[in-house]
Length: 111
Length: 115
Image (cartoon, rainbow over all chains, first blue to last red):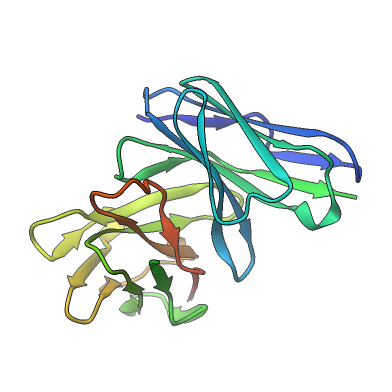
């Protein structure tokens, strides 16, 4: 079974803090993704990566950056957390353009 | 650009009744289609997918969906629901043979199964 793990299930941070969300997959997938999920809006793509050190902006990249130094690991960085970044963050991986496998999510609260 | 519309934000239904969750998409190129389910406080799990071939696709937990290219729809159905089917369901598309590997999701449909 494909396994995608995320470093934290719940996280509480203060405004202005730098926040790291980590994601690891064990299926040697080339593609990895970060989504944000908000009620009534579905999932929105923040960034994705199709290879080590390669990244592309998604639909809502403002306020976020990413890092992919190893194929299995994809990190989402909030340089200076703000209250409007309070959300559920979901990581996923895939081979080619086929189905994506999701991690359990990190519920981030910024106070 | 592609888009996905899930027409119903919430669908209440009684246990053992049939259910249909509607999904329409818009795209200028061919697509792959997916349905995912999300149980409370969990990530998304793939229910079923359409890549090519038969337009009637069967998935896990007794769900099925039919791809209708002329109506650009991919509605999800189950003939008899259980309480355990209460969850949020997302329809998604990816574009065939393009550089964009990401999925575009609908806004979700919350299925509430009542006893």
